[in-house]
Amino acid sequence: MEDSQPPLVRSVIGAYDAWSRLEENYEKKSLANKLFLRRLFLTMMYEGNDVMENTNKLKTLADQLDAVGSPISEADLMTTLLGSLRES
Image (cartoon, helix red, strand yellow):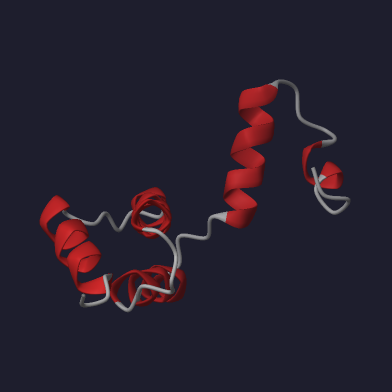
C-alpha cells in the first residue's frame, strides 16, 4: 500500500469496506475517465512486447472499462488485439 492510501481506509472495518473505499477513490466512473480508458483501448499499438504481454495490456484496459461501467464486447477486444499487432 502506498503512503497516501492508509488515511482512506483507517476508519473502516473489514476488507470489503476497505476495498470499496479504495475503489471509490481510484476507479472514477466519470464520463471523462470512461472516454480516456476507451481511447487508450482503441488506440493500443504493438510496442515491441511479446504477444502475450500485449494481450494482457488490452485485457487489463478492458477490465478497467468494465469496472467503470463501460464494458468492451468480445468482438471489439479481438478486433483491437488484431489491429494492435504489427504486420509481419
